[in-house]
Image 1 (cartoon, rainbow, N blue to C red):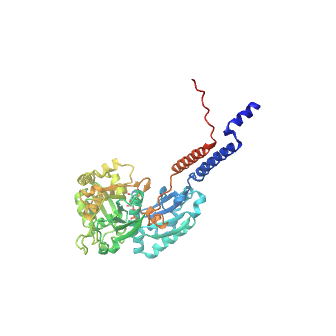
Image 2 (image 1 turned 90 degrees about the horizontal axis):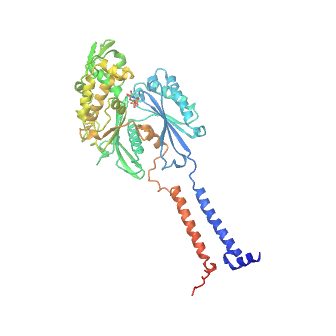
Image 3 (image 1 turned 90 degrees about the vertical axis):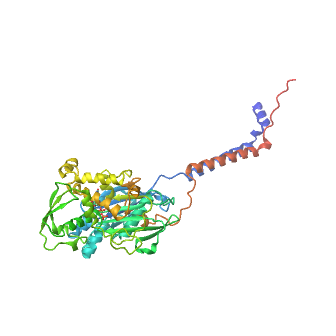
Length: 497
Ligand SMILES: O=c1ccn([C@@H]2O[C@H](COP(=O)(O)OP(=O)(O)O)[C@@H](O)[C@H]2O)c(=O)[nH]1
């Protein structure tokens, strides 16, 4: 006992005051680090959701987007979580029985209910945007178009989401939002990089959008959209050609070739050996061709294939008007188009067709694309059917025409040359999200892209923890050094003489 007491008395570190100060110091530092670490620990990721229905002319598709809940203003990445293809045709085809347009959406909407966590249902915005199919129905029969919207609205309101309305997008919106989607997904907007143009081919319309160099907006204000995104200004050129989607343009090509009302028509855009009976009334049942209907045409005609790419191109070219242009330059049909600029992403039917034809690779020269198409179109119909037993005959029969149309639209219509053609990338999706107008539409309506660049993000969690730990250690060392006056004197070793 007495020996211990003696030791404590001799060792100043063992004074009660020093021990208390040291213990308090250590506790304070541990508490500081713990609080800092816990307070700034990343919370388990929670997501918010948005739903957009793309009511196209040929079909409707539902897209669910998700983004981190705490970052919905600016920094979080919005990604496609799920998509659902509505069975059956586009909503515009239900003009005669509108309730069915609403009913057709039920299955995909039920899927959406399963995909979005139920606690998020009520706050999840739900939008429906209709494109060229409904634009045409609206032109043709306004009342029928309104009835379809009523039915669709009623159906969508029956689901637990935050319904934000159904409307027809203008061609300009469709083009501009497709461009926003592509550049958002490529991270070009946030980083202020040179943007990519967007080429969208639907069934009833087609869009071209890009940021030209030295572009005089005043030449054609209706083709211009100004954006300020993440602190950068963009003057976008965009145009939507109604009736120049691949289904309507096929009608126009058939109408052009049957304008004198023949009983049999030989078509270079279909394979040799192809032969079907078509109804004149059904062919001309669209505002894109109704004016061309031949008088005294028989009820039906036989549509046969010849399979000649070059002659097919000649037919397609007759559908473009190159004669009048009141601007400094035009694409076709008297529509202003500034010189093409930069690279382009071509999606929707551009991708479906070129992918089927194995022509999506940008390194394939334009001349080879044409040669491959010439070879494909010339292949007998029987052989084509044998090679692709899994593809529906209706779709299979049209790839020669669609491929020819795509090449003709890009080169003769938009003026892509053999040099600039290689700047087109045929894409379906970017980083898991489909290319199309829907994402850009939702980003815009939910104000998810700020006009100004967001403030630079705070330190990442790991960086924060390291800095707090280093500061705490420095404080500790400082504290120890501050106790120097009461440090034990080093006992001198006995000197050996
Ligand atoms: O898997 C698919 C989905 C669509 N399409 C075609 O792509 C076009 C898409 O048109 P959409 O319905 O989106 O028409 P929009 O209303 O945009 O003109 C139509 O010609 C469809 O036949 C296709 O070839 N494969």
